[in-house]
Image 1 (cartoon, rainbow, N blue to C red):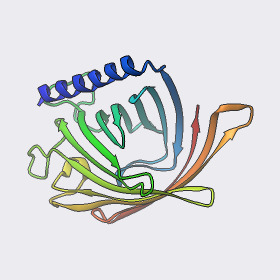
Image 2 (tube, rainbow, N blue to C red):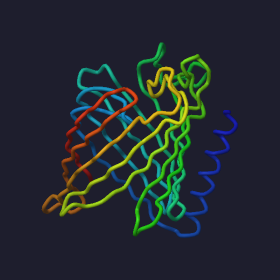
Image 3 (cartoon, rainbow, N blue to C red):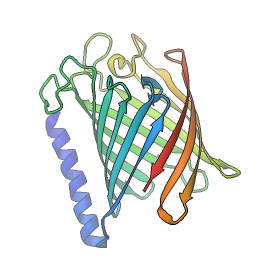
Length: 241
């Protein structure tokens, strides 16, 4: 499995090199942070109010993103690193997902009991006129990736989402599903296929006067998790530069 991960990283790096050489585009950095009332991940409650910074580098069709989340009492911490490459309407990605809550949370551990999960993903925007986005993500490596019987789960998640605008408000609605048992990742118990994430998002951004590269926004997310019989209404503020 580790060899597959190395191959995928090498493949993304090769695409990045070809893109830079062919298009000779400059490097662009962006960053920002969100403050959220609740941190949810694919319908699963992770923590209460949280601070979530992000930093991204884009070169042509390639991007590298660092994203984190930490709650205000320090009991939960997450750090995700993602490489992605866009090929027209299709984006492929490889992510290292690290979060606390394991028997041993030391970051620089990549052995059989590592707290990291390596996840491959692919998303497809159907068309500009009908901008449905279909996404699939599968965990390839990680000691915590197990089902309810303690076996490797290759935890996967499939999502259908549709963005739209109501007057000046940016909206997105979607549904996410877990296709087979992935108890440790999605807290699904002994379930197989289940609907994990039904959401309706709304938000609006404003440019900061005199600072055209910076913006501030507010957003709300209404999220139902039928598998866990849970619901959360999240509010947040975002800053971008």
